[in-house]
Image (cartoon, rainbow, N blue to C red; front, side):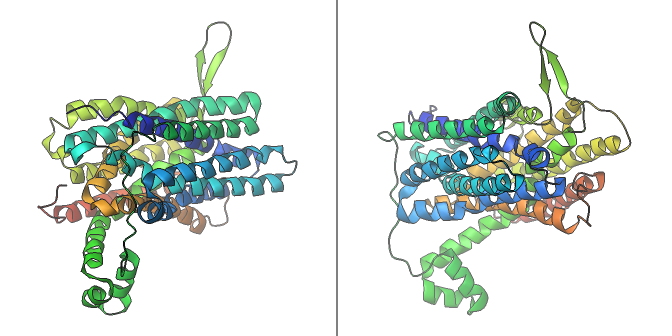
Length: 454
């Protein structure tokens, strides 16, 4: 059986609309903060990455609700409604007269959106996996690639539509339209309610979970004491989770690099010449720092089928998820070497077209496919049935940590300056960090275990 289950179309449609809403809002956020709210580049960079970090921290709570209280279906449905509210709040920010009021409304809206996006994040991809019969490895790979393709379909259109909305109708409508699409996402998900395979939450009593076992091991006497207090099953689960986390930890620098496409890359592109494409008649279509972000999802939608059909079957080593992850981390280091070179030329006085950013976007996209699609698949296949959402939430924590790393580096290395986050030296720092971690990762991956499916 090579076809995906029919109910998967509702999940794929939901994900496409939800990603349109999230990335559309995110695409205009950096220049809204620096140009409209008069925040410095360092302040705006830190704010954006703290917000994205929160989106990927809160999946821990969403995973607990899904696995222990509501189940994945109800968790996605209920929290999606809160997500819509967050977009509604954000859309009102530009209606206030003072910059201070707009900043407060912005922060409130971002907080609610973080609760919504973070709450459903570990559940949607795991819910997709729940629909695959017999958990066929071939069909699982196909499902997660289709899922990821939908993510990028939604984000591609958002990068084109939302900046255009802002230019023609202002920020209120530009923030409102993503909220409308989040409402559509919730409705599409609800439509498939009768067809889904819904795994009920595990409400069975337990003497201990991951955090209790870990606390006991670290502070109350080790694994033997944890087995006595928490039970053998909880200890076995904790050992399994820690083993998976020993791989996940190396992915953190990749996310520090990837998520700067919405912050430092936008600021860099703002100092480049937009691409002007003549339109029928007398008009032109300008592709600036917000619109150029669409290059990533376009490349993803092109490269995923090519890599899946031609590269994975013919490059034997890349059939192994652990090899894909390491190769992707190494390529992210190369990406920022290119970005640093572009920044060096700008700082030297060169006048450059924003088309030059297509080069690092291309390399980063290949890196993303090797890391992100593989990571979702790895998180699901390595986790026991009752820990699917929990493991997926831990994968999302790597994105949280990557964004917090950017915020921390920006804060501690600011040296009283307002814009040194956008500099050649800073980009070289991230490149070196990812390169060192990639080397260390390959040593860890070789010891992960020959009996593991990875």
